Image 1 (spheres, rainbow, N blue to C red):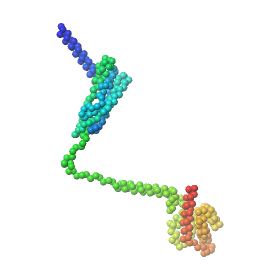
Image 2 (cartoon, helix red, strand yellow):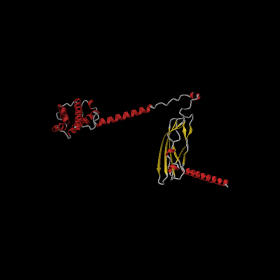
Image 3 (cartoon, rainbow, N blue to C red):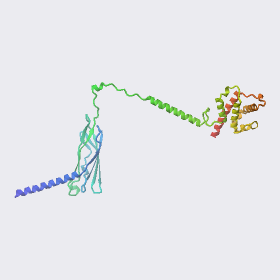
Length: 317
C-alpha cells in the first residue's frame, strides 16, 4: 500500500513537470525572431551590425539583465556594443529590439562562413515578475557571415612568368581637340563682345554714312584710279548727304557741318571737293577746279574715323 502511494505521488510529480515543460516549449514556439544583418563582405577588424526583433506575449516582462554584456565572446569575436529598446504594443504585448555590434579579430586563408554564437535571453522569473507564469526562454539563433582573407593568394612561378600587360595609352588627341574647340569658341565670343562694344575699327557695329563711304571706296579700289568718274562723285555726294540728313546744294552746304560737326576739321577740303564736283556735274568752269583722288581719299578716311569717334562718345554720354 505504501509502495503504491509512493508510485502514485511520483507519477503526479512527473506529469506536473512535463506539463510545465510543455507549456514553456509552446510559449517559445510562439516567439517569432527577426534578425537583420549583412552576411557578406567582412574581413579582419570589421564591425558587424545585427538587429534582432521579437514580441513576447501578454503577462510576460522582458529581463534586461539577460542581455549579454559587452566584451570578448571568444578568441576571434568581441561584442562592442548592445542597445536594447522595449515598447508596449496596443494588445499589451511587449516589442523587444536589440542592436548588437560585433567586431572580428580573426582571419582565414580562404573565404568561408563563420558563425556568430546563438544568444539566450529570457523574461523575468516568477519571483520578480509577480505573476504565475514561468520565465520564457528566447534563443536567438546563430548567424553565419562570410569572412574574406586579409592577404591575397600567393603568386605561383607559372603566373609570375606571364608577360606584363602594357597599360592603355592616355587619349591625348581628344583633349587637344576639346582644348582647341574651347579656344576657338572663346575667341569667337570675345570677338562678338568687341563688336558689341564697337571696338573693331574695320568692322563697326553701326557704321555711319562716312564709314560706309570709305568702305565702298576701298572695295572698288578707287585709290588706284587716276581720276574720279561721275559715278564716283555721285557716291561721295551721297555720303555727304547722308551725314547731313538731306540733299546738299552749294547754298545749303553749311547744313552739313551743322549736322556733322566732326567734319569741321576737313571743312576746307570738303568744300573744295563739293564745289569742284558741282561744277563738273553742270559743266560750268570745270577746268578751274581739280579734284585729287589722293586728297579726297585722305579726307574721306579721316572723316570716317572722326565720325566713328563722335558716335562712340555720343553713346557713352
